[in-house]
Length: 421
Ligand code: PMP
Image (cartoon, rainbow, N blue to C red; front, side):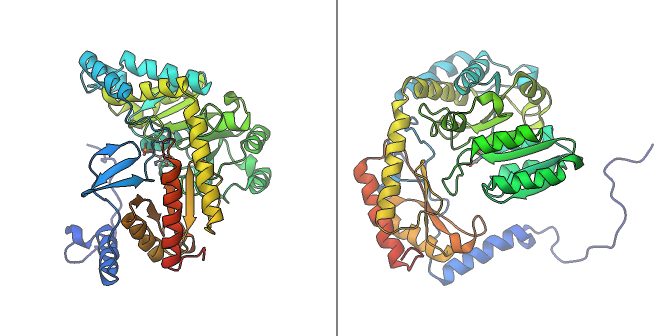
């Protein structure tokens, strides 16, 4: 009958009571340890806060309205009645679900319209819309690279990039954050050892709020015949005079970047991801990327919402300018208050470094008491001495709300003995 595939060679017996008990799993233990440490310190857990209604930049939590600095709705499009109307119309026409993989019956005209719109907006030949931003990175990287290739990833890149890399089997090189000289030096010594080389960076780093030197990266990737992929999850709608992202910001033609990846969950107020690039690369991904081919098409409400958000962004570029003005105001006020804003450059994501995971959590709980929601980013997501409160700015945050949030953060970070003071 032949040897079944997937059979592992015999090895020593792994003894131990409760092997099938989930409470012995390292993941369960890790959560339990964190819980008991928080309880011993009488520290309320800020994570998974149950949230009620949303109204502009405020959210209802318990019986209070809280000014929210943790939402990705950078251009404040989420509550726009045009989104709700478009979703209603689309559901009436197509139903809710795409009902199948795009490949086999789930390829709706609405999907095509979104993809054409994304490609036109970003200035690429083609685009592909997928059901999850996280799965998009995973699928793209593992589809395009494999054993014999190398993926050079900025050390601050998102978890989904590293997951894709693990699945690909390519060699992994971690590039010190935004260090193009290091990258160029490594490639000059090692390029010839590999077939394909993929460089992955983000357009706007989501924990630090800084951007890469795209012109330098393009020059390097052209010199070494490498591919450059940019995760634009946080930069589309944010960077560039009209929100077209890092290429517009840097004055680089989009065709010089091999693959743009983004999510529909941030500026586009929906859920899902997208890839944009040449006809050739999108052809490969459309027909072979496992997270696309073997997954259902994007749901109808999510497609309609993203398409409408895109139309609003194109028609109302003043939202982008407003977001930038608000972000710069936040950064300037925070610096004037003596806060350490890390690498923040005033582009929608502003970290306020507290410098210790426990203190960052305490500070987050205290600003919440003041009616401000900004979550702590703690170890291991960032080094403990770089633990921080992260603020996402939205175009509709009022100047008063920004000033009040900065005042609260400054007072509370000082109160917990944070690094800035
Ligand atoms: N890339 C980056 C840089 C992200 O920050 C995120 C999520 N915040 C993703 C990819 C995954 O996107 P999604 O949440 O839409 O799955």
